[in-house]
Image 1 (cartoon, rainbow, N blue to C red):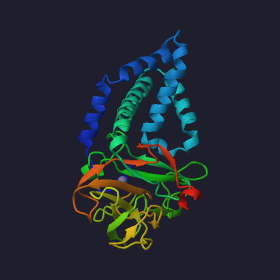
Image 2: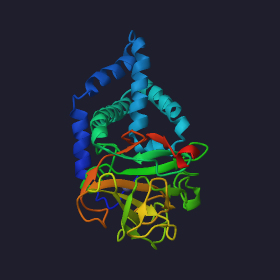
Image 3: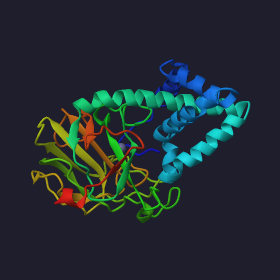
Image 4: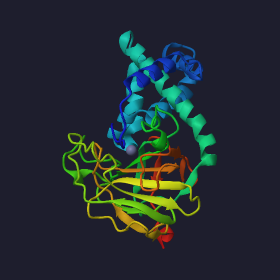
Length: 314
Ligand SMILES: [Zn+2]
């Protein structure tokens, strides 16, 4: 999925990463041995459970296409695929092993980064009032966060919402914006600070088929954080006409800012949010990325979090 603000595709980097992943010995070889043992080893049945658990965790957390499955059904669907692949031979089995290696590598790399980045991150409150949200892109490596190669967006999050069936939308890539769970959701201010930029009036894009390359952030708001005045927070792809603040306004955490839309360079409605330091105060597309924490967690792809409870809003 391409949900980025102004990303340029770097296929060579991605291919290089894949090759490095396959060749890497960073944790993948032991995992590979476990996989082979439970798949082919007649006496290695006791490794089957931990092996399967690691495999499912790796794939569920890492692969972006999992986002098209209902959240609750992902482990079941993936378990069925893994078992089927485990009983296959030849090319299918080789592909399954390769997918597992890549996923395990990305997972290990991202988890290693997660704990170190948590300490330097800026804490923000959930930008929504209620509901369950998940991270479509996010984390401290290119495998789980497509923003990572772009300096100012390094630790950006692309956030989607789950509906009652734990799906992000009704349909695969529906054309109607209202079928996306997050579309129109109120965006609450995640930090106290001062608004340094507001852009409004840009139209929603048609999901998947239309992107606004001239206004990559679409309708957006930039806030200078009161707790760290050298740090700015940008919120992008907002709904035209829904923005409630103006440049120079002092804002507090929990205050209504706007609604989620689909303006700018976006393939489907989502909230893009990132923190940066340096650059110009009225732009969210320069400077250097700063890691974010929500409720103390440095989030990565496929992590879930809840919006503010009624008590937290009051
Ligand atoms: Zn993004």
